[in-house]
Image (cartoon, rainbow, N blue to C red; front, side, top):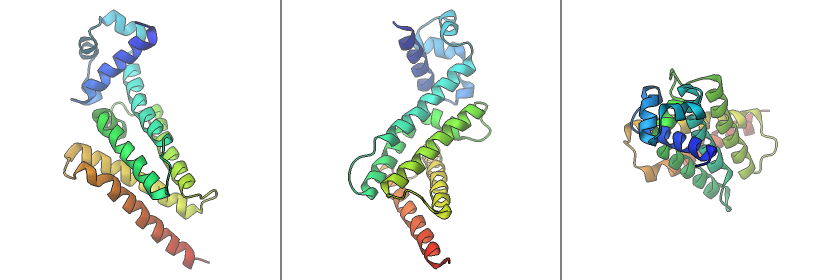
Length: 193
């Protein structure tokens, strides 16, 4: 197995474990048992458990950014629905990692995870602006889009933790939320001198 394949295997084992418990509760022993490797082999690829946790969480954010980058062709609303559906899929696939990444107060939270989260948020805003063909958005439009990304994050966290809303409802509801928010912003901009 190549070095990169072994690293990927250890990351996959960690993410798999994050599916059953929070990252801060997963130990090196848990990961090596899941990956069926020795502790010395683990430390050959990762200098610390924290480094593996960061790489695993980075895999989650990379998955989110990659999903955002593959917007479908078509009308803006359809493209946005597909992007949101993709975000929901990635969040569900990496459930515990996603929750750990966004949960305030997590022992995993660092400036690096904050930067990774900001990268996802900024990419989401860029893609929405591209889809809506808005090259130079008004400050209120940017504020609206940033607020909506917070709505998406909060919704996904609640959905992953509580599961009270059917999966098939989320993407349409979230896009409808953005549509309503942008309409309110447009109405305000139309009345502001």
